[in-house]
Image 1 (tube, rainbow, N blue to C red):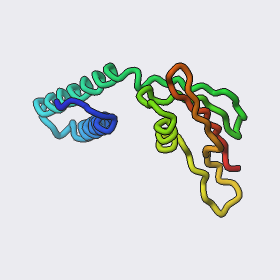
Image 2 (cartoon, helix red, strand yellow):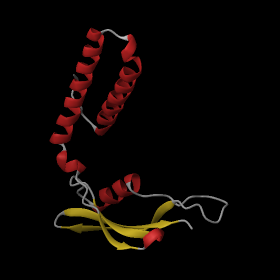
Image 3 (cartoon, rainbow, N blue to C red):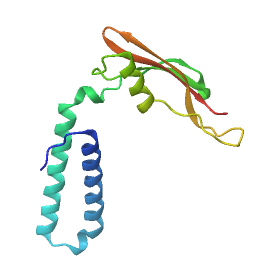
Image 4 (cartoon, rainbow, N blue to C red):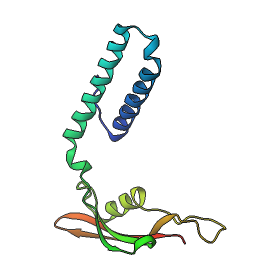
Length: 139
C-alpha cells in the first residue's frame, strides 16, 4: 500500500474506501467468497494507512477554535489558531485568506442566509499566529 503524503492523498484514500465499501455491499450477492475476502483485505489495508496518517499528524487535526463572542443566529467572533509552520504575519494573512476567509454572497436578493467574513485580525501570541474571525450572516 502506497504511503499517504498529503491531505489530498488522505481524502482520496477515504473516498476510495467509501466507494469500495458501497460497491462491495451492492455486488456481494454475485461474488464468490475469495473475491469478497480479497476486497475486504484491500479495504482493511487502506484503513490501516489512513489511521497511521492520522496518528502521525495528530497535531494537525486538533481543533482549538474558540468562540469569543456569540451573536446567536447573526454570527460570532472566533479565535482560530493558524498552523505552527507560519513564520511571518504575511504568511499567516495569506493562509487565512486562502483557507478561512468567506466571501460575501453576491445576490440580487435581500437575504440569502449565507455566512461570510465581516472582518479578521491576525495576531501573534507566544510565537504562534492566531486570527480573530468575525463571521456574519447575510440577512
